[in-house]
Image (cartoon, rainbow, N blue to C red; front, side, top):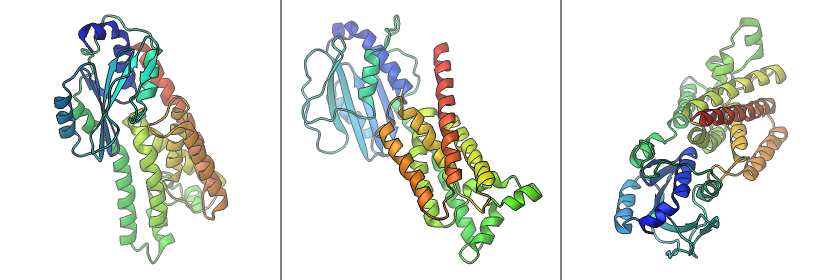
Amino acid sequence: MDNSDKFEHFDFYDAFCRQCIAKGFRATGAVLAKSDGGSLCLVFIGNFDEEHQMEWATAVSQSYGSAYVVHISTGDSPSEGEAYHGQSPYLIKWRVDPDNQIVHVPEGQPDDVMGLKTIIQAAFNSESTEGVSPTSLPYGESPETHIKANIPICTFALAFTNIAMMVLMYWWGYAHNPIGVAAQFGAIIPARIWEYGEFYRLFMAMFIHFGWSHLFFNLVGMLIFGTRIERYYGKLPFLLTYIVTGLIASVTSLLLTQGFSAGASGAVYGLVGSAFVYTRRQPMDIINKHVMLIYIIFGLGMGFVMPNIDYFGHIGGLISGILAGYIVLKAGNLSESKV
């Protein structure tokens, strides 16, 4: 692709960069980066020195299990690309035809990476932006800086807190007196809350679990959905969603269950509800609305079948998470409309 081709499809490149930024990528010039757990995606647009590009990508992606280097150029004919094999980083070459709204994917290469196909389609349908070059948009951060900043540290911190609490409970004697120790650490006990005003239990219960297996299943859900909510919604919205939906789940459990309860599952279901709202618009990486719906149905169904499951807490967390998701997305749309 030469400069005249880039100038001809300027509106597409501009819209594509802006759509990528809105979906969690960061960019300096024409290089965009996004991390997803153990994977890294680097997107190059325009004409680049492929050898230098791959050397740089290899150096940047050392700490990732897999890395994808997606090279996007414009034109009306398919690009030549190698089959998708070998070792990371994987080189992927797509040629985009903005005039006919077609993405040409060479045989043997993946047809989507981290939702880029959806982003390209959104760029096709975006209104053009005049007067701003996609290579000079003020995105500010280098890919290396964004890779570090985009690590879901809040999710990891919450996971560590739950694990640390479980370790403290065992050190305190949980193995020999589980009910007593859980009560001491702040499990929900309706009589203590209503008669003695120990409302702190509604918060502390989110960090208390009945054994390692109980903690493990909640950590799995927290890491799957928490990491995505933190990246797609932002760190502060993630923390507020987790805490508020967890508290609502605790209150729901207190009012409807009237039993001894604890666990992070209410807050995790809050994250599930928020993720479901987001995936109704577009996927969260490999998680789409169909996967979310199956997870919700299966999870709630198991809650009614298995014993000692606080399903009212789960439902309270899920419903409040759905509401929180709508509120955050609505606030985000209002903010974007003012820019």
